[in-house]
Amino acid sequence: MKKILLLGSGELGKELTISLQRFGCHIIACDKYKNAPAMQVSQKCEVFDMLDSNKLKQVIAEHKPDLIVPEIEAIDTESLIQFEKNGIKVIPSSRAVSMTMNRDKIRNRAKELGIKTARFGYAESLDELIEMFHNINGKVAIKPVMSSSGKGQSYASTVSDVRKAWTIALTGMRGKKKKVIIEEFINFDYEVTLLTIIDSKGNFHFCPPIGHVQERGDYQYSWQPAKCEKIIVKQMKSIARKIVKDLDGKGLFGIEFFVKKGEIFFSELSPRPHDTGMVTMFTQNFSEFDLHARAILDFTIPKIEIYKKGVSQVILANKNAQGKFLIKGIENAFQDKTIDIRVFGKPETKPYRRMGVILASNIKNAKKALSKIKVVNI
Ligand SMILES: Nc1ncnc2c1ncn2[C@@H]1O[C@H](COP(=O)(O)OP(=O)(O)O)[C@@H](O)[C@H]1O
Ligand SMILES: [Mg+2]
Image (cartoon, protein in one colour):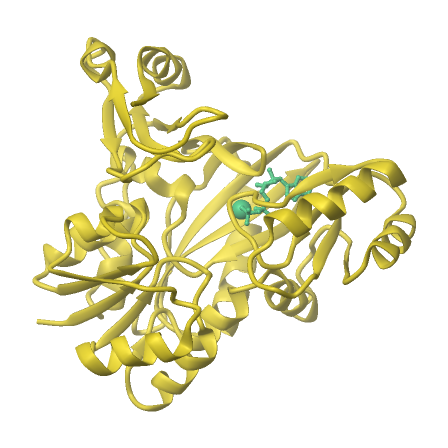
């Protein structure tokens, strides 16, 4: 029985825990708050800040896991590199985790590998940011290099927007280092996630592309399969192979691309299951969590098939949400017998916090079900 230390215990970690337990694994779920989703289904849990290297070392020394499986970016990756040297396997690899912890390393690496991205630059002060804005010359996206789920992200078309974007970035960033990435805004035709699996023998497997729509830099709904020309899928797979091979390791990766007039832009990559990939719980014979579990346990990857088309639609807390809550209307939503729902079980709401997901066969049914569900603070 493999002992697995899960670093990050959100909704993706919860589904991964369930998938791993089906293969007899023992999971220690970690996060910085109590009763996080994965902790509700794991054998053990630890509550601490995973950026705190001493605490991380202490937890690892106590549990002596076989595998460390990160579910989020905010981890002390330097310690992970040390642990890997001492024989504890980090998934997919400590290199992949440290390269993708912030936006800059992976973006620089993509450039070195000759992979096309939006034009970009970095700034560590407002003056530098304004200078970069003039260099890029046009609408831009500005994001803290340390952030996720759209936090601290905004768009700018004028110098006055850039000033606002700098403040937004500083408010939304993680960590102490003031550094932002400024990217040319790509007015893409569509964006997709390509779930890419590399198994322990180095073989690649792909899920059909997932389309998605984002608001405030956070995903609202996704669907699979995305309408994507064959030639585009072929090119995306070739980029995915190149970058995943370079990162090293085994497991499932979520790779984000923008597509504009037949041109592909690599956007970012998560070395783990992806939020837009929750749709695979409805559409595929094996979900992204089952596939990640199999890859990291060195099992054979089965043939991946889409059973039916599907959509995942997030259930969000409202703009001013705070604290304890009830989710109302699930029984009403289930009047549509074709949908399914996952409630994550987060202990509290926050503004726009993702509380659950609706799985449906098309966006119309998903939106109809969503209109019947309310997240109400109590
Ligand atoms: N350069 C860009 N041009 C156009 N849209 C962008 C750009 N950067 C980000 N976006 C939009 O914002 C979303 C979130 O940005 P992303 O870089 O993926 O951040 P996160 O790590 O928070 O998911 C993207 O999926 C896309 O819809
Ligand atoms: Mg993203």
